[in-house]
Image 1 (cartoon, one colour):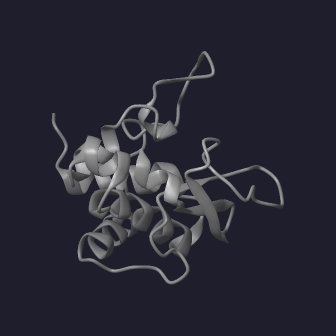
Image 2 (image 1 turned 90 degrees about the vertical axis):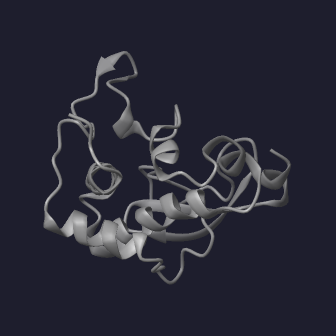
Length: 147
């Protein structure tokens, strides 16, 4: 069965940030929507403003991979059906809402440490803007717009 775009969005919110509380889930949802709505760079070129293309872009979300580090990934969007809160946050983000402190962030990750690297990804296209829960959030640098 093919999932609707709303269902996929709710599933990825749960899988990527389900343990981060409401604000953590909203922050991740904002990053995903920022990728949908970005005006230039890799995400515009590859995803063309399509939420499904953002979600399915290879190598972007651990929850979309059935194998991680050579092992079966049990935490995928296919194995974790969303609950009402995940649909509510998906609807909130799809309606154009934004979480303060995220800005135009295009990336997030959990560094599994108390501090966030100032640059992410390693190619220097993102600069730290905030940390919410365990996730560090990054806005695009000028270098991103050349990708």
